[in-house]
Image 1 (cartoon, rainbow, N blue to C red):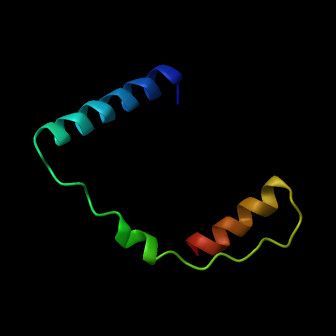
Image 2 (image 1 turned 45 degrees about the horizontal axis):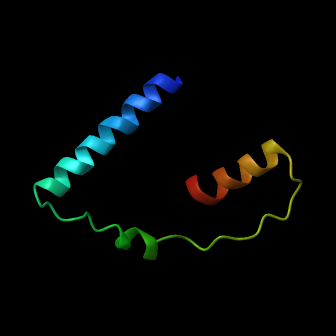
Length: 62
């Protein structure tokens, strides 16, 4: 993504956050996701890009 686009996204997010606070909306409950995370096993293979990528794919997306 281009830096100008990222800047616009961050700015829009900050504006929406401030509007939510101004209107008194509650914070979304993000604590539920923390309890459901899988156990992470240490990577014990070669530390090259493909090996690490494949390990992440196998562990989280298969």
